[in-house]
Image (cartoon, rainbow, N blue to C red; front, side, top):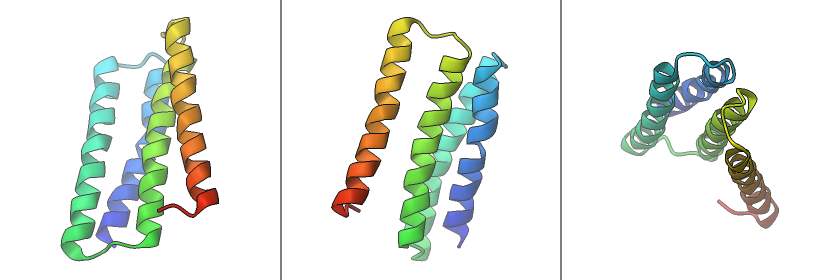
Length: 111
């Protein structure tokens, strides 16, 4: 499935994004990578709908990709020590919220 391939490629972008942020790599490149991954998120959904490729696996890896992108961006910024204490707390709350929503969705049999 083409849409799942796009999603898996998007998930693969989380590693270089984390590394760029954690090592204080080029900020513009990290921003472009993050924005590119966001555009791929839109594209894989449109491709799946257009080609009738919607599946439970596709929905799962899409949600996992969204959470991994958020996690890698927040953790990369925290690892680089470029965030203030308020930024670290906000990032931690964001990551915790993602984990709670994912866990609740699984436990409650959500979509």
